[in-house]
Image (cartoon, rainbow, N blue to C red; front, top):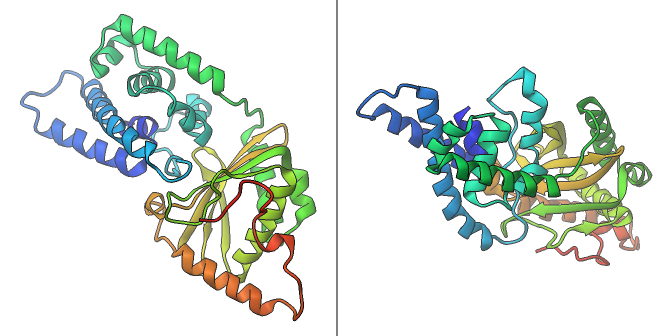
Length: 316
């Protein structure tokens, strides 16, 4: 539970783990045993997370390109009766909405809306009065409701559509991709200046379909493996090289039977907790070399050999 609170406040696996570790150390060395260990630990991890988030905000303002939360394979906190709510609060879209809140609003929202804490407990955790916490909760809920996307598809439907999408990606089936993508689909990557990325994303069904075919072709050249799974409680995949090392993590936002947004995390600093990370620059160089070697003599460069240049997509 402590990790789940910290991760939703911070959007970072490594920072959440550090917050939990620091919380446990404080508990171990507390001069007196708390009456309620759960309340004490929750309050401490919340305060630590708020402090970390305040300093992280400065770093995120200087971040190169779009900032996405670190992908989470599974939530260690389980509550079968509220599994859908907990899963929704983990989605990349929800975590990015939380980024719009102040650290205090974010902490209050997570404790109240996600973990159903009472206001007396929340007030103790964030060091504000109950009345102030109620106001923070109202403001946070208003901001979240205003921007929250309404993903109506159930989990089974999302997984089925995601399976078809990744099959089409592997096969380079541009027609199948067009059918699965929304007209205004947006594909955007978080490289943090340490991996290839599209500075403002790729927009529109035609541009995204062509970019996916191009990427799929290059990925196949280096014997890449697509591993569909749930990431942050939503349909996604881990893409690995031939040795099983992590290349990137993808999540899909799905609405009305179509993929609305494809978010890719390529920054290696955000993938180490998933497994050993591949050298994406070396892979890209190898893939392009092999693609050039296997192209028939005199074969012209096709539109799918590179991401579209008619949009704001660029490779750093």
